[in-house]
Image (tube, rainbow, N blue to C red; front, side, top):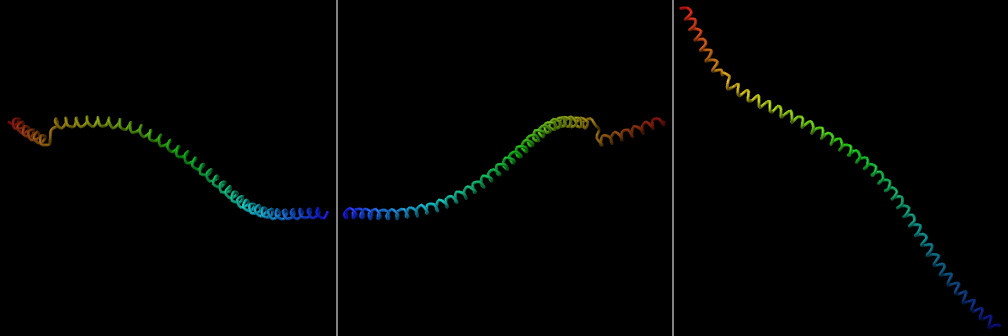
Length: 147
């Protein structure tokens, strides 16, 4: 019986030793889990921080998108106004070109008429000559009348 008890005792000691070894391994695992838990907490904080940053960036992008959309709409309106103004200016320019063409034709006609008048009109020299001749003829007529 003593042998059996010794065997049981040896087995118990062996089991105790194994339990002690397992206890140490569990402590080591517990420390590793605790370390991993701390690292996970740090990662969770980093993820939360990144999430906040992403939310901030998302808000900024949305704000910029709204501003860009408003600016594009305003520029589109301005371009449409510019197109209408250019079209109206082109119409007015065409009208002005027609009027200028008519004025050019009238000016050319007036120049021709002036040239014709210059050719047919008497000059100062001619008028002075005719005035002198009329005076001479008037004296001759007076002389003839008085004789």
